[in-house]
Structures are given as structure tokens and as C-alpha cells.
Length: 221
Image 1 (cartoon, rainbow, N blue to C red):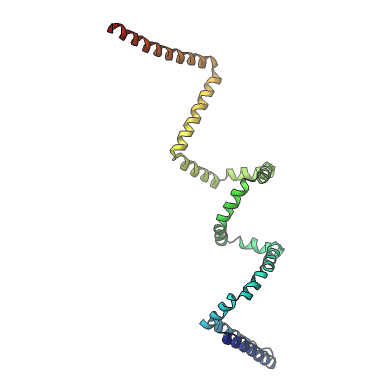
Image 2: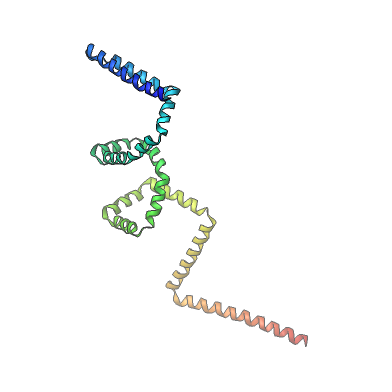
């Protein structure tokens, strides 16, 4: 296999020299270059070519070189993304709905994990509160809440929530407590009177039970 690889390199070098010489003689004709390129591509597509590349990638020295270059690759990507051309490129790409959807779906799981972690961070919580208190941000949020799509989404969430027995029971409990508090605020005297009536009724029920018990003992004697 190494012989094949060496032969591949030698052939490519020879073909390159021949194509350069031919190009110089013919005034820069690209025909030989295209032919050489096609030949190289065809060679790499063969089973032997693929196997040779796999063997190269499996070599310890080559893998070490690739790992060493990771820092360079990372730095290059960061510089590319933060440059003006990089930002313009991503802005243009994100306008494509299909790409934006695919990109968002691929990042969804990681984004959810990141957001859950950030929501527990006090510093992040404080920052979010500050952002939401910004008048411009508040206005934007209000505009979103007025939109038809947002209202439709809220209605869907509420419909799903009301299908939950636990949610319905909790809402009923809250509404009952609120109604009781409102009655107390509106007419304290009436609420107090109702409370006394309930207490008297409970006492009568207790006394009646005791009386019936005594009557039973007397008749028995």
C-alpha cells in the first residue's frame, strides 16, 4: 500500500510537471491541467486510493498533527465568524428559511441545556431582569404579545393546560379562595354572621348527638 501511495505521489508530481511544461509551450492552455485534475480525482475515488487515505489518517503521527492543528482551526473559525465578511455571510445565510430551520433544529437540544443552566445562574437572572426593564425591550415584548401568532400560541397552551385534571383542580381551589376573600372584604359583618351561624349549627349537631345518646340510655333503664 505504501508503494501505491508513493507511486501516487510520484505520478502526481510527474503529471504536474508535464502539465506545467505543456501549459508554458501552449500559452497557458488549461486543458492539460483539467485532465490532470480529473485523473487525480479518479485515482482517489478508487478502492486503493480510499484505503491509502484511511491508512494515512490512522497513523499516530498524522493524528497528532491534526490534534495540534485544532487550535489553529478554532482560531481561524473564530476570526472568520467575527469578521465583517463572516457576519455578513451568516446574516445572508440565515435569511434562507430552510437553512435557518435546519440549523435551529440541530442546535435545539444544546440550546435547551444551556438555557436551563443559565436560568439557575443569579447573574444571568439579574441581567434578564435588567433587559426586560428596558423601555425599548418592554415595548417590543408588548408588540409581540399583541400579535395574532402569539395569541394563537397562548390559546393553544391554555387549551392543553385545561385538559389536565390537576390544573383544573388547582384553578378551582384558587378561585374558591379568591371568592371567599372578596366576600369578606365586601361585607365583613355578613361574613362574621355566616361564620357564627356555621359554629352554632356545629354546636347544635354536637348537642343533638349527645341528647339522643342520653335518651337511649334512659329508655334502656
